[in-house]
Image (cartoon, rainbow, N blue to C red; front, top):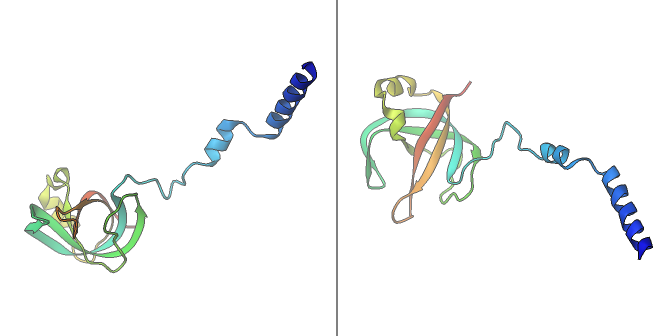
Length: 142
């Protein structure tokens, strides 16, 4: 019985000497900073602005301001997306209410042919046949 105990203990020590500490392994498995993990129903897209729309209904919900864009590239996507966006699509995107507090500034920034990286949240319509996308964050494309 004692021999088995010593044998098991020796094997365990040998195994731990060859393996790196658990914390080091976990750090190496981190997500790259260029592609952070996205929340469910969230998509990060590169777009070119076509124009602004005012007082428009999308999926039976009226928005004060929306922006019509050409999708250049899907940069990153979260899980649970119902209707995926593709390059070349021309969706109409609404603004999250806190973003439209300064409507004049939004209109100055979102001029035709301007390029942006947008983070949008997918919100399916009631019948799930179409989807509206709400802008929650934007930054100019450099």
